[in-house]
Length: 311
Image (cartoon, rainbow, N blue to C red; front, side, top):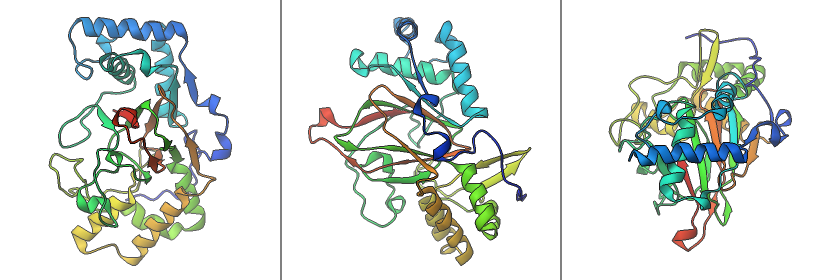
């Protein structure tokens, strides 16, 4: 286990004051680029390829290839998050918008299953799952299937994308945090917390593995430093429930460390908030950012309920 004792200085280390201008992290597709996406989707649909069954080589783009390569560069070597804007979901049937979305995502990575059902693209909406305990993971609840507030966490992949199809009546605001900025803050103020955080925890996988219920096979570090790069994986609820199942709970220092990290993610200096409008695509690098969601107040009418697609 290697603990970095120097502050990290990289483009993915930022505070809200550094990224206040949303134009700097939003790319808006031009009409010509939208047409290019539509034409590429038509070719895919004409070949009867399902939205998640094709790859980058099938989704031919001319001018947009350079644009999406630059966005991928920002995800991997820059600030670690992007927002793509300009699509109008109401203009398309669901097959077409999902094909366009998967096509864009194919330039930013290779889609992988995101749950034990093997889904490559899932609908983020209220499925009516009820939270009945202090830790929803204990009941096998995935929070993105509810209207609940979701605290800072990472997903189990390199990049995660969300396409907003329909906004909620109120709420559902998205938050992004620089995980490595949080590391610097812990190093400065509470360096004693780095040992348990870098040593890691057995985490509860809550349906993210191959079976519905399983623990990670080894401790997962919250921060790991390798090959000159730092990355982070964090989910307070998964850590606490994993510790409960593995050893009856966290030791006092580990509990303090996890709570302090959670506290930092909630501070306005670190927590960038944005509302995804219909047609917006948000993509995050899970290695260097955490993300959140505010509580959703949705419409009663099922046809008007909040809907996003996740890849």
